Length: 84
Image (tube, rainbow, N blue to C red; front, side, top):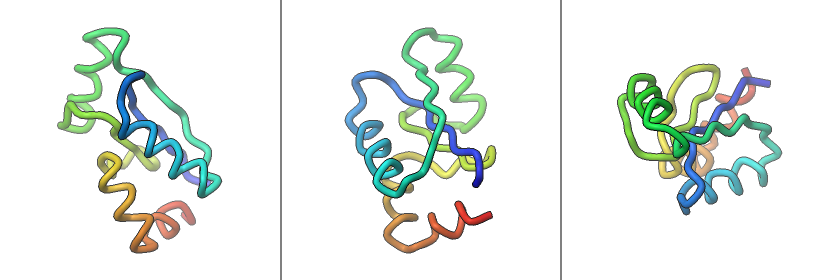
């Protein structure tokens, strides 16, 4: 199964939605909080070019946030990405 990493903050409702979607599909993921330090937020920006959360990576490829994750799930492309 591919490596899934989600960058989150504690108070983000879209992070909670993304976690629920992944859990409902039985997808294990590593959660990395970026709200603890400015350095971790800057790392996220450098990594993805975005400053919003969640930011989800599948095998080090950024797929975006919750909206993009939900669209991939709806289209069936998420299953394809995870079948690698």
